Length: 112
Length: 109
Image (cartoon, rainbow over all chains, first blue to last red; front, side, top):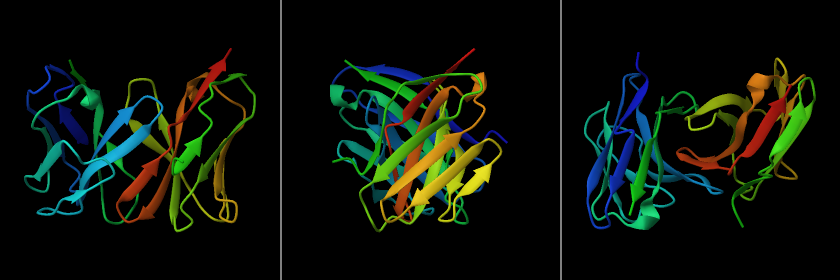
């Protein structure tokens, strides 16, 4: 089992460019999450998907969109990147039976 | 005020020392509590859940004080491999996990 995988690992964008961060899990988990981690701020929830076909906003959704493509995949899209979106992005998943979240290795995004 | 607050440290301790971290949370409706560990430039991983009665896992002891709204983590007999950032996590509703900014621990020989 690969667990939670994320692509790309690193990305540099110019202001105004768009991109999609990909996340996939092979643990048959129902719930999936996107977080960003900034120095001194801890992880903050951007969007989550409690089950296939549903998505909901988290604490900091502005500037992002998500798609739960199927049970395995949950993508995060930046339509027009801004320097304030420079961060490390983590995808996570969990079953409905436990609160334990399993995280992917992260994507380091820099917006110049 | 942040919902989950932790002393950022760093805590620098010698091998074999006992070290304790505290975390406070602001939402009294919070239901579930956890400690995650995050190594440098890696993803967070669950260290342990925190139960009302307190719980222990080897050298690690977690306690919850609902009245004062704080959680603690005690590490006994510190090892070099314990060096990491420890994240306090509080769950208020089913999918809303709030993370503290983390406490950095360095264990030195």
